[in-house]
Length: 239
Picture 1 (cartoon, one colour):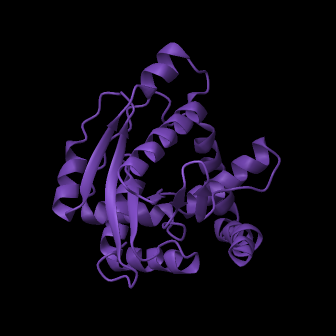
Picture 2 (cartoon, rainbow, N blue to C red):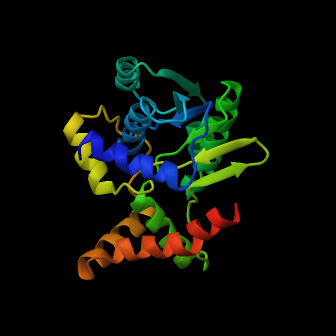
């Protein structure tokens, strides 16, 4: 995928769901994976021509695993984006102290908490997550299968306690396009050192969606359309 196409998808999501207002200072959560680095490129490119002027900074939460964030820091320097690393003991708490059998939920909650608190201190009023179209549909499947409800990420969420907006500008971008963009620009992806990586319910949902879309081409797009009609459009009209 070319950068021009990525920016087109990103701007459409931003415009459709009013994700960016003039004067916003947006923190981009950077895990080091292909999704968050693609989001960094997208918002960095968008800020150069979008009519609503906004600032961005990049923020990584160091969970405590051995990881080299040097390539990400170098990329941020090349893009002229301010970069911060938040040091935590999340890995020790989750895997050693708590010894969680299903660590992903607690880890995600603690990671988001650390990120949100830090970006508020950095003067940000919004934080951008790199959830893409596949993530949206996979989350719907997980919610329906394991929780019995029709639920997934929203384009725009307001966290009352933190007085912080969460935005998801990559909603219209498919994972396959992100992989193509990663290869096109040679993103400096940092491998996830978490021992639970690749053995989660989300991986199950990913494989399920892939199988459904293979057997019935267009399934993913139809599910996303259902989400737009039932959750996103209704929410936009209410707000």
